[in-house]
Amino acid sequence: MERGKENIGFIGLGIMGKPMVRNLLKAGYVPCVYNRSRAAVSELEAEGATAANSSKEAAERSDIVITMLPDSSDVEAVVLGTNGILEAAHEGLLLIDMSTISPVVTKRIAAEVEKAGTRMLDAPVSGGDKGAIAGTLSIMAGGDAGDFERAMPLFEAMGKTIRHCGPLGSGQVVKACNQIVVALVIEAVSEAMVLGSKAGVDPDVILQVLSGGLAQNRVLDLRGPTMIEHDFTPGFKARLHRKDMGIILETAREFGVALPVSALVDQMFTHLVAGGKGDLDHSSLLLVIEALSNHSINEA
Ligand code: NAD
Image (tube, rainbow, N blue to C red; front, side):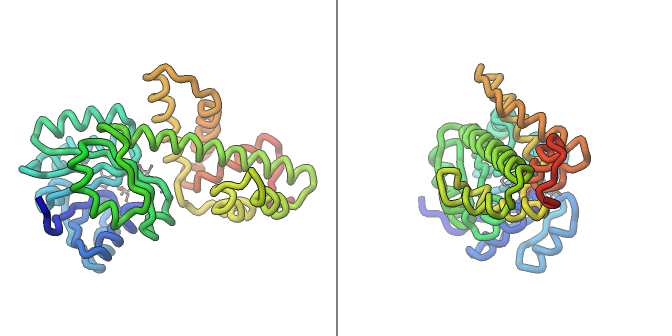
């Protein structure tokens, strides 16, 4: 069945959610938006979105409701809690959770959602704030193939590489794989920078040379220059990457997989967050390596 433009609800208007709503507006949708703090709602209302006073209201007024929230517990509260999405469950409602949360929790939420006659996809993203702004996110989805097809016009408004990964929870599994690689690459770049710099080489030279060979990668390209300057404006907050390391290790334990280096990098993120730096960009992992070597590449 050919559908017209569906009514969209969007809950969670942070670093990612806000630009994703802007791209839906550009594609001709008029999302009904809700966020815990009001400023982001008013900002998007001024740009053409409509405002809801609760997650329940956003879902009531929608055919498809998207969540883009920090953690598993936030998604549970917004979907299953008081004034939550399920209180507004209605025929045909599709919930798309684009947050990065545990695949185990995803399945638990989906079981409740399905009992209420609502459909659910997990569709986490990668590409960061820059990808969200440009509408070039990678979107990895799990769930029913028909629901995925239905969501495709929305995904195309927000992303570029869009993939159905398998049954419900598969999107979150692929996202966990993605976050292993990103964390370990940031850690490797940090070690390279600190070694090279303390051994007397200008960090800009290290960056340029590594960018031209097999060591080239997107962390170096996008974050290398800001890491050298110690500009850790997020981006992706360190506390959220620590949250993702928890998801990765929990999933690994469930499936009996050993991830020794991920476990080590999890400890580094914990050190960073415990030291009050959780709201810095995740590239601030550099500060942990600098502290271990008592050397700042910024002051070299
Ligand atoms: P953020 O902290 O900037 O935004 C989260 C928003 O959710 C905030 O505006 C907050 O007020 C709102 N919120 C929290 N609890 C709520 C509730 N109960 N009801 C309504 N609103 C609520 O986080 P972000 O960087 O936008 O990330 C969102 C998700 O996307 C996370 O799961 C993150 O891991 C994932 N992600 C982030 C990036 C990135 O680069 N920032 C990239 C890929 C994936």
